[in-house]
Image (cartoon, rainbow, N blue to C red):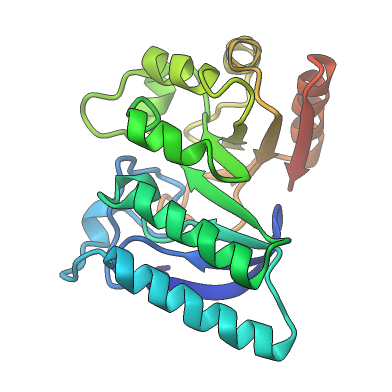
Length: 250
C-alpha cells in the first residue's frame, strides 16, 4: 500500500481525526530508515520506486491547493499529518517544509494540528529536533527497548543507536508523544521482559502522552498477529500508573 505524493486524503485516522496526509516520499516507492515487518507500505526491497522525493515547493503548492479546495467545501482537516511512504524526517528540506506547513495551516485552518509520525531515527540531529519542536504532535516510535527485538521487528538501517535515541527523546522535555506497536506471532513484544524495560524508558523520556496500538492493516509478514484488547489495556494502565496519558487503538 503506497500513498500519493505529496498530499493524500483526507482520511479518518484512528488516533488523530480527519487527517490530511503529507507524504515527503515518492508516490511510486518507499524510502525509510526502518524496514518494519508490519509496515503497510511493504518491505523496502519490494517497494523501490524511480521517482525523486517531492521538493519543498511542490509540497507547499500541493498543500495550498488542497486546503483551498477543502475550505471551499467547508470541510477543514483536524490535523495535517506527515506520514506516507517512509520516514518524513529523512527529507533534506524537512525543517523548511515544516515552516511552510505552519504558515499555510495558520492561513487556512488555524485550529488544525500539525502531526509528524516518525520512527525517531533522526531525532539526534539538531535541525530535525528544532523542526519537531514546532509541530503540535511530535509522535515518535519506540516499539521496544530490546535491541534484538528491534532488529527483528523494526529492522533499522546501520548505525541505529537505541540509547542515543532515548536520550534525544528525553531532550524534547515532554514535547513528544511516544507511539508503540504491540503485536504477537513469531515476534512478540508483549511479554513482561519487554514491557517492563519499555516502561522504564518512558520514565526517562517523560512524554506528554503515549499511544499504544496494534496491527490494523495487512502486513508484509503474514505470520504476525494483533495484540488482544486485554493485553493492550493492561499495558496502558501501567503507563497511566506512571502519571502519563495513554490512548489505545485496537
